[in-house]
Length: 240
Image (cartoon, rainbow, N blue to C red):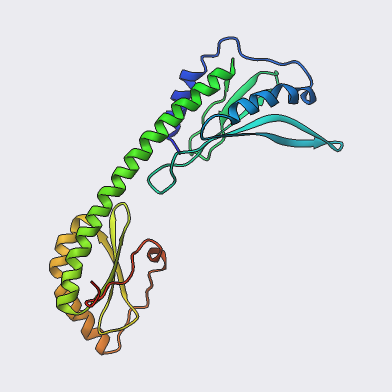
């Protein structure tokens, strides 16, 4: 999700509060007024708008709210999430919009004067989402290139010292798993990306220590369940 200050800025710029919409009609009659708005917003690219059932009164459904979702053009760890808003009537009958996400700091609701203001908000969010997606893809590309370089260095060491490895990474750390002496169980550890060259320099000596432990039947009672999903396949000295 976008930061709360960004959402506040977009709401402030898109909804100046001039001549806010106000309906005095009873809630049941607001449905007909909301339907064309829902259809207009739902037709926007990357937008999903649905009429929401608030509650039931004596077997009758009272509907006076729209749920608005703006989706990013791509999904992934670096690409951001959907932005959600609620459009509803206040106790005074004014048509309002507010954040419906899970942000730590709250975002105040603001009055709506025209549907065009909502469309302006969507345009601002889509533009920011697209920018974030491009930045995320660039970061992923750089990260993948770095991982390929790390993998190449580890592959050379694996061929020279006879061990298998699996490598992955998070935003800050390298997650490395090693298998020695043909064992199916591995040694799993992580370290900061900036320490990779230092770890590589120490790895041959570390492998010797792991081999000694393996021959003595020593194992670490640890696992890599949290890393396994973001690591590549195991690569051994015979894998090319």
